[in-house]
Length: 332
Image (cartoon, rainbow, N blue to C red; front, side, top):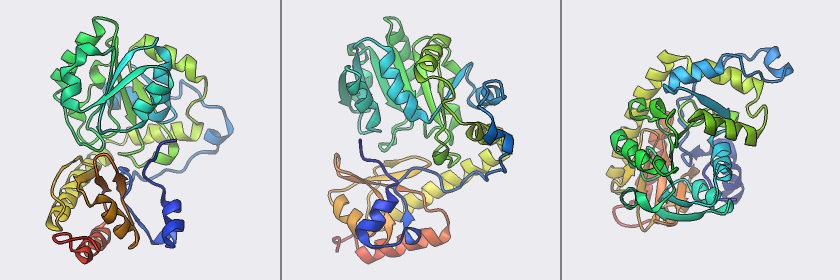
C-alpha cells in the first residue's frame, strides 16, 4: 500500500507524543467541518436504498447530469482501470499516487508526467488522468482547455478522468456540468471540503454507460445508509458551504503568508493546503514532528504539504515552532 497523510497514531508512537497533543497538518481535510446531524435509527437498521433522494441532491450540488455514489473516490480510482482493455495512460505528477498505482496494477502502460507535458502529449495516450486543483502541486486548468483535450481523446474512444477532490472551494471551475459527454469522467469526494473523510463517500460523474459499468463492478450498497443520510444533508446545506469557502480561502492565504515569513518560499497550494519544495523538507518534517506537528513529507520532489490550522491557537503553535527552527539559517 502507498503512503498517505493522516497516520497520526503511528507518529504518536514514533515520537512518544500522545495523539491528542498533536497538531495534524498532514492531510488536506478541512478543519472547518460540517456540523454532523443526529442520524435516525432507520438509517442504521435498513439496507441503503437508491431512491432516498441522494442522487437528486448530488446532481444539483455538482451540476452533473448523472452521478454514482461510491465508497470514497478511492473506490472509483481502483475500479475504473478495470473497465478498459490495456491502454496507454498518462497521469499527472506530482500528484495523488493512487491513480498511477491503480492503472499499473490493472495492467495498463502508465507514464507519469508534469501537467504541461501531459497536456501537450495528449495524442500519445488513450487515457489522461488529471487532478484539479492538483494535490500537492496546486496546478489549475482552464476548463475550455480540458474540454478540448477531452474531445481529442473521446474522438478515438479515449477517456479524460479529472479528480476534483479539492474543487468544492472553487465550484465554477468544475467539469461536472459536462460529465454526460462520453469519455469524460469526474471524481468528487466529500472528505476534504465537508471534512467527512471517515464516512468514505464520493461520487463519479460520467456518462450513463460508464456509470452503469462501474456500478456493476462495485456491486450493491457501496455507501452505507447512515453515510447516505449525512451526505445528503451536507450537500443541501448551501449557507454552510458558502461560509466554508470563505473560511478556506482566508485560512489558506494566512498559512501561505506564515510559511513565507518563516523562510519557506512559496511553491504552490490550494484552498485546502500549502505546498513547499525545499531540500530541507525531511529535516523540517522530523523537527516539527518532534514538537507534535505532523506534516506530509514527499521525497520526489523534496517537499512538505501543510494542511490548514483550524484556529488562532493552531496558527500560533505552528508559528512558534517555525520560529524555533530559524529556517532562514538552518534546521536544528
